[in-house]
Image (tube, rainbow, N blue to C red; front, side, top):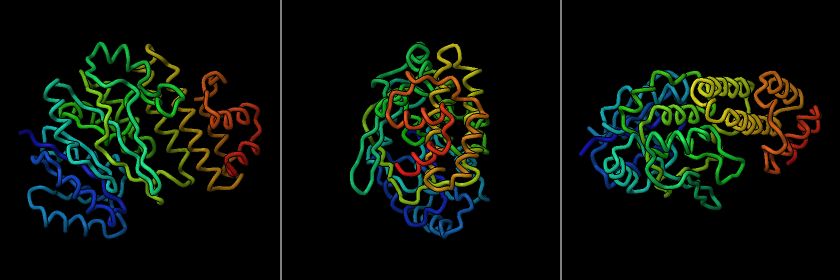
Length: 333
């Protein structure tokens, strides 16, 4: 039985971490190690990590580092992993019992580089099943080139089909040898949509993978999620990550479908602007619009590209330079 290393970046996770680790230790697949990387958390997360490590000798290892962001945290985990396979889990999420056993059985059956599951988005009111829009099955190099690469970054504006392969890092199990091919290309200054970068690199470096459209992962929505809210660095961080993805597109994907980057940029800049409008004043929102225009990433988006009503709400005021209308629409709605 081959070992799996499960890497958990830890930041402000003292209240949720034990439940997350318990779901992994309860896996039907037993040959595993859990790597907890405390990313300079200001709460007592490190103390919780140490207690978990002491209670599970040989199964849990703890690494402590200065705060540097999630990419630097999971890179430290990757470089210290002893497993043949690598999986990830956020410090407030949980695995279902057969997450590892089911995935590893498929990876070994098809000798593929990774498996991509669906996931379950869990809120206080309901659970939502989210799936890869690519159909279940084995994808070799030819099928990846023909069916996945033209939609690698973004598929279509349909909430059920944004991505052929879900962009999340944590709904997959990987051969470590795959991640070793691109780990040094992971930019530690990437603070937004970093999973898009990771998954794009995984697809580009894979010889094959398997899509399994069932869920073994529970993504727990938290009221104080770090993916919500606004800070003055937000747009710079989105633009930095989009520049990385733009470069990957130019080097690897432009011959397949260059439009996919523009669609990805539109969706993420719309999300970033919404966070700005909800949490900041008009001055900050106007500056954000200037940054969107300056980057030029969505200049060529046409009305026929965007399809969804929430996109029209952004598209028309933006194209008509109605900055205050754009701000108020996202502030109120």
